[in-house]
Length: 101
Length: 494
Image (cartoon, rainbow over all chains, first blue to last red; front, side, top):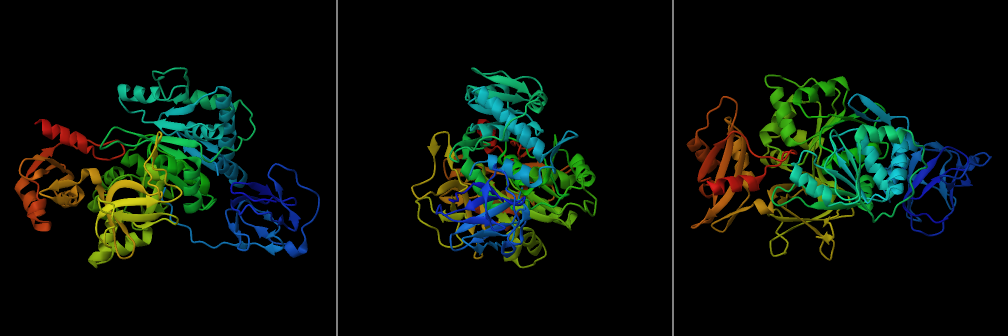
């Protein structure tokens, strides 16, 4: 699938939802818990999380894949690790700025 | 990315959290999303060209803002306190608008629909709507009239991409704790009010609106609502500090962060506030309407380090607006466009994705994307930005550029003076001569010669005002900026 900034996707298996912050526009295989992610409004399928892609996503955290220069923001937490082309996405660590508003 | 995404994200990420509290009523993120989607349907069906919002902070404010964003039309919050003539000129400048108002209906222009704000909320509650469609990120999202201290107010254009860039690069999504609360007393038609709403929404923080600013009510509300962060403009902080006269501490243990901006903060007020709120982290936020709010920050540690330091360089940081946010570039240039030497003052230029620099139809960005802020400032060796004031306020006396702020700071540092402004008036010999207007503190008597002597010793004689007038108060916008052009007009006439 092509990932473009602002795109919203959900897991086919769990409650996980993400927004694309950065995407190169190239065709990638984005999965959650081992199953391809689907559009936000599509319905979930029956199935179980692949043990090799166990894990979870946390609300408000950003997940990155350096190879494809992709960044996803978790907008709803849920089970199953996020992966692109078989690589599990890493958690992006950034010190939040102090609130100015 | 379009602004509607923030609504989708908030309602799916923390929909049941309370989003806004105003006038004793509250709404969750999910309710605001539902009502906003209903508003979008209404606006699309009515063919409205924009949404005008005339009123104070209220539950209808986020609903109207996100409703307009979903419909792909501009949201235009107007200063409802303006005089009838100025206000109707601004209303008429936007024909075909949908108007949401507080109190009595305003005089309307061509083809406008108007609805009272509580009525608007009640009507939206009865509609069940689908989530709003995605909008082009290049559409105008918000039109904001600048405060117009040096010229007539202009409407700055903020597009979806500018606002989203600000949120994505400087606010942590869902970063607020469950019981965080932000107290908001800046008006809805000011960029700080807009940025405040959006970033607290994006962080998932409960917003508590104060209908009308009053220092006692502000302090009471912080204590009662267990407020964790608040944003004020300098005149508000000054009144809060005055209200705590004789106290050792503000007694607001819940308040973790206090941010300020909008105009220059007088140093004596800031120093007093830092000792009255010893456990609170202070943040100075610098930005303009045209930059989608904050582009530089002086953080809590910077404040405390400077406040407790005896090193003059560190100490001076209290008057800095801090370091630039990620993704923002700065240049300081001479009037002729060449770059200044490091540490020298000049004109401040900014560049970044959140910077619009655009007014109805006219972009001020140069070919390389740099925005001329028309603020004068300089950057120290560690990258801290200092703003001296508007370039248009600079006084040129005998060929020397003089920033009024420097002299105003010295005048205000005197115990008898609570407010001061310095302007230039035409002068045959010097081009311009320095004239000051000061306001005396309660039951204080001002000795003009002592003030002149103070400026002369602290600065130098060429920066000493030739005339000092004593007024009861200075003309200010209701967001605290001094209306210098009114002072000039008053003193030129006499």
